[in-house]
Each structure stands twice: as structure tokens, then as C-alpha cells.
Amino acid sequence: MCLAIPGQVISINQSASPITAKVNFSGIIREVVVEWIDQVAVNDYVIVHAGFAISKLDQQAALETLQLFEQFEQQQE
Image 1 (tube, rainbow, N blue to C red):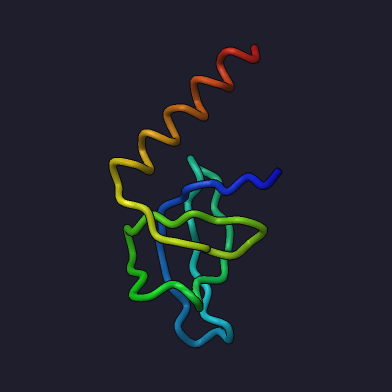
Image 2: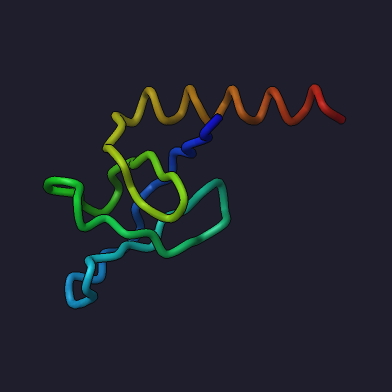
């Protein structure tokens, strides 16, 4: 089973090869390859798996997904 996590793009490094972005995952910032996502921009939400953005996600869907992750985490405590 694969798990892809939504995160918000906070900066893009166009000079990197492949193109990367810093992505915020609920306060955790990671560098992610975004080379293969069309027209990714700062503040976009992307779905990330294994360090690669695999698609863009609209803000409402991203926030709903993050809320579900948070609810699951609280139930595990």
C-alpha cells in the first residue's frame, strides 16, 4: 500500500535539475521534486509520494485530507 501526503508549496527552485520545491507538511518542510507537475506555483497543494509530487490538489480537498490525518492521529493517542 502506498501513502501520498498533501503539502503546500512554499518556494520553487527553478534552477535545480530536476525542478524542486520546498513543501510544508503541517509544519514539516521538505524538498520535493515537482518537475513533472504542470504549472505548479507557490501556495499550490501537491500530493507527494517518496519525495516526488505526483499531482496537484485543490485547497479544499487538501485541507479536508489533512484534517482526516489529524483526526486519525488523535484517535491513536
